[in-house]
Structures are given as C-alpha cells and as structure tokens.
Image (tube, rainbow, N blue to C red; front, side):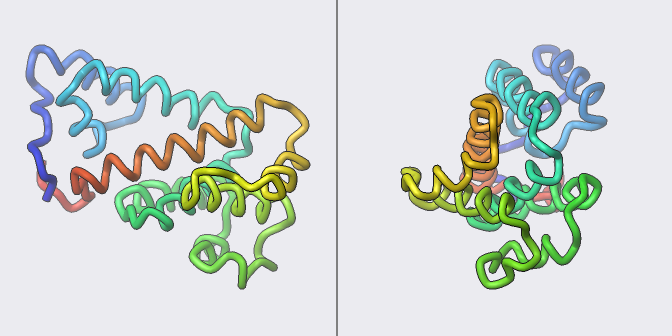
Length: 176
C-alpha cells in the first residue's frame, strides 16, 4: 500500500489534468494518481515522460530495454510490470526480458549496441559517474548528439520514476 493517499481524481483542481492524462494515456495509472497530489509536478512529469516515450528518436525496443533494466536494478516491480508488455510490443523478445537481470552472462541475446547501452544504463544507475570507456563504447553507436541526449535522458528519467515509485511504495495491486 502506498505511504500517502492517492489523489482524488474528481477534485476540481485535479480533474482537468486527470482527464488530459486519460485522453493521452488511456487511464490514470497509480503513478499519475500519486503525482496528481501536486498538479504542477504531475503536469511537468507528464510532459517530460511523454517526450522520452513518444517524441524520442530512439528505437522503441532499445528504450524499453533501458527502462526494464533500470526497473530491475532499482527493484521497482511496478515499473517493470507496466513496461514488460510495452517492451514485447516494441520488439524485445521474452528471452531478452528474462536475461536482463544477468545480461553480461547471457550476452549472446544482445547485439553489440544493446550491450553498450546496457553497460551505460548500469553505470548511470549504479555509479552515477560513467567511465570514459563505457561512454566511448555506447557513443560509437549513436551518430547524433540528439541520440546520446535522448538515451541519457531516458536512463535518468526512469531512475527518477523508480525512485519515486519505491520511496512512496506505489504498487499495481494498490486499491485507489
């Protein structure tokens, strides 16, 4: 159960943004229902995560692989539950999803670019500072600075998401 109450979606100050989230995302997930306790934070978050998920030039499978790896590293089951079906839809295989927890020992399931992205994701998530060799390996696969910014922002954004989820103990089985 979440540590603080979820926002009342029918509150006059929240309803317009809740309706916008429903229109854009199909429903108001637990994450957004919690964020709506601060409508201005929820609105900024929505804009940022929409840019990451829907306006990025990154390949969808690569983006979802990053999100799933961050969820695993940060022990964020809600994030993983929400994104596993998206990852499969975007082109990741079930075998890749299953191997993400031990990707270095199951590296044959990932190509050179994916392994470089996973190493970058691990460094950003675990250590914050990225070693030069890890950066060089991943940046060799992206020709445009835009793609490196989008990759880095994706890793950073989903670290933010998982930390928010876990600090407030937001879970998919919560009753709202």
